[in-house]
Length: 199
Length: 199
DNA sequence: GTTATATTGTACCAGTCGGTATTAAATGTA
DNA sequence: TACATTTAATACCGACTGGTACAATATAAC
Image 1 (cartoon, rainbow over the protein chains, first blue to last red):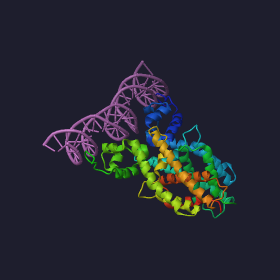
Image 2: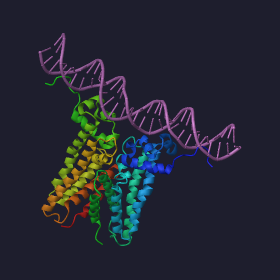
Image 3: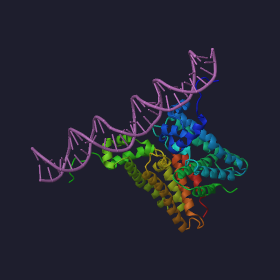
């Protein structure tokens, strides 16, 4: 067994509670005190568990990706038809970004728009840019599959189309932060799907 | 004449120099000290001229709108064909967001994604949301004109289409902040124009 | 029981935050 | 010249920032 006084809180649960604060306020906007309060833990305990604010943010970002990114990615593979898969994925994104149970918008989008500030460490900046590009890659994979299965003309440039949808997702994150309604953003998705060429 | 010691700096010029700092770092991320340094003015002088950080940001936001928003709006009216007008507008947005002479992305987009933080005053939050919606309204006006001129089917829902393009613009702002290249974003615009129904 | 180890909360560190009191300097008016 | 008025820069305010030293406490090993 490990010697010493046992930790009185669940570090994983604390991370879950820290996540929405970073989500809502970004890296800079979230103070360590606010994070500790949200976690229900004293500040030194949070530091003992995660090192510093930078590492805590990276852990929260990873958690965000494996939890919410994953469940949205599932929408991409659930549907057998490529077009319907992308549409359901975008609907899932809209639902997530406007879910009142969470902060509005997207942790990655919010983080990316503030990552040029000198207070943001390089590691955070690169992790956010990587996460943003990962969304385009997931989309590109699904589009390539749709192309292979004959649901998308062979002439369509997959990377451009994937970046297009990914850009739209980022825009949805901004709009959700700005208070756009779920119905409004569903309408945006319906319009955006109009680029899908007829079979 | 006005009595008292004359001001030694141009308040308008100072605002021009302050603007890029807010643009890059957002409301929270930009410290008053950094703003004063950028303006080439002492901190109390900046306060004397603009009151406080909140008022300074609102002034910078207004300047941003009347300068950059205007010139992009011109692209919407320059072209007589509605479809081409929107395309040129989106190209102008991409060029602006990736112009190395300015910070990457958009002041309004960056501001909107961080406006939920408790450190952001309500006035700033509402001004940003208003500015975001103003983009959609400009687009809606142009689309309505295109519809009247027979370049867009009467069945097309103008508000949804305007919100779609505005959401894309917001997404372009995020992507530009994330380091996307101008060519990549032009490709996004080309893809996005694919929703325009055949005449 | 004693010792070594690890976590706890309090209280604090230097530095920065937004904002301002204060005093010296520069002007127009008299 | 003397005075009223306005701006200038320095130096400071309390509050908060990210981060930590420290003493008390709780456990496992001996």
